Length: 160
Image (cartoon, rainbow, N blue to C red; front, side):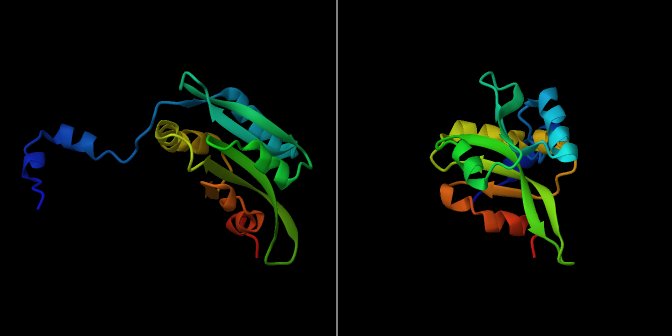
């Protein structure tokens, strides 16, 4: 049995900091990310944008962009093994009314073979980029190549 009594002897402020739900790494989303995302969202200039956290762990920047019409296979090939990345992918879906539409979906790539520190950093910084990239409602998480399934991503984006 674990006793929680000592925990409740702590001052309220300390207890609150131990159970804080909004953990953030302090990483900021760069302005270029927002500008290029708007071009993708409004003008459909890119098939995908891949973002990374800088080596100094202070900001999120664009790693790679896929030209309009780039294939899903090309997108997958840009996600390196042993790394973590964020991305936005333009996905074509079929709506309930039978029409086709394009949706942007946020994809979090955290390879199982990546070391624990980058995984933790990317997990704790994800909210910063998701809040900055307005208009994305769905998120898809991939941890290995098998998770990068276009049909599953389409389904998550609202494909019927």
